[in-house]
Image (cartoon, helix red, strand yellow):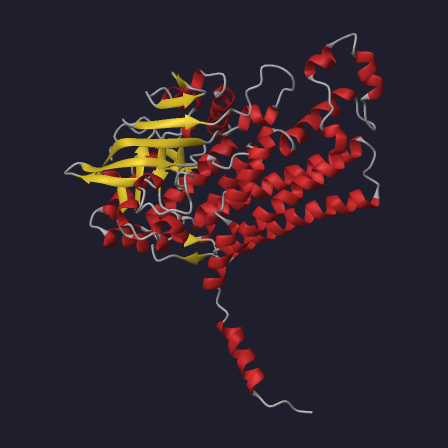
Amino acid sequence: MDISNALGAMTGDRYRRSLNDGREVWLAGERVENVAEHPAFRGVVDEFARLFDLRLSDPEARDLNTFISPETGNRVSRSYALPTTAEELRAKFAAAEWWMRESWGQLGRSPDFMANVVVGLYDYRDELEKGRSGFGANAVNYHRYAMEHDLVLTHALGDPQIDRGASPLDDPDLALRVVEENERGVVIRGAKQLATLAPFSHEVLVYLNGVTAQRGAEEFVLWFALPMNAQGLKILCREPLGDHGNGHSHPLGRRFDEQDAMLFFDDVEIPWERLFLLGDSMLAVRGLSRINAWSMQSTHIRFHERLKVFVSVAAMIAESIGVHGFRGIQENLGELISYAETLRLGIVGAEASARSTPGGLLAPAPSYGLGFWSADVSARVVEIVRRIGASGLIMQPTEADLANPELRPFLEKYMRGHEIDVDRKARLFRIAWELVGDGFGSRQELYEYLHRGDPGAGRTRLLRTYDRSAVDSRLTELVSAPLTA
């Protein structure tokens, strides 16, 4: 893959221009001509551009987030770094902390997340090479290509939700599949969901989840990377959640509605150099934990930032209506803090327990149990904020209401708070509403539940892989010995 014209770390202007590449994006039955200029997408594009520029313009942020590529001399994203020491691993996750803090923990598909998946793909290179000659080298080359061009990536793992009780062996439209191999590569047909960040990404990485990979049909097992403007790829977006022509300002939805999309692959050709795995279900199953080793930690860091936002919003709401001294409210706030602290300690523990991988990198300890716990407590966090805010979450004046001189005296008299004016109180509650009440908040919570995979299936995998042998052995000895009086 060519890096001769690679420019390294992305800038805001370059990012905006890169999205106008002929990609076939559909929204509300119409094709979007330019994602960067469309009103439904502009807020998110502007936010990404701001983050890219801030990352380079602030000297402290630049040194935290980037390093000099030894091959090209480009300044490249630390999210793509290949850590081999504890110091390099800490620097990598310090960059992740910056991304998550700057985006308030709202970007589940931040560039840092998928860059870390590509790091995992690189780490799995030897096994991929054994699966098929050249595929391991493809993984190495793709990591290099993505890093030097600072690609923003999405992934698409799920099959279409047509009939989950049926097999793609009976109906091939149930899963993405290879329909042809030729000297240039393979031709694929089908669909994938749910590609979060798809209209804002440069490429999509497709790799099979464990359930799909074990269905017994090898033509449905493939890992590859593809540009979003590939011929035959259609991107169908859901209804935007941050595009509001009037009413509340929606500061979170406007900036962080990262979109979700269905991808239709209409006989799309994947060149051999962009394929990483083909027709080997067990290799795919074994590889899932390997390639997600660093992205899982990135997810924990993001969710921790999101929890901290919930703690502050909930506490400020309680203070704004004078209930912060109530025993029950204090218990609720303490519960929120306990979740944030538990996750913080889990993040620290996973990094402190890092170990070398077969690929020669240093990865945080596996933490899938922590991820499934996060998916569970997320709903409880939302519930607590709803209870504290109560009816105030629903009834707050808009910016237009606040600016109306006829309404203003009534708002100041009846909609102010405890030691807080009506303007700040209304804006605070509207942020809370975005987190726990409107379409954006509901989508974020559903994303949180699904992002780490099905919790039930995940717990079953934990049961199968958890090492009980030492304690089982001690218990066996204990119950085998005769009881004494």
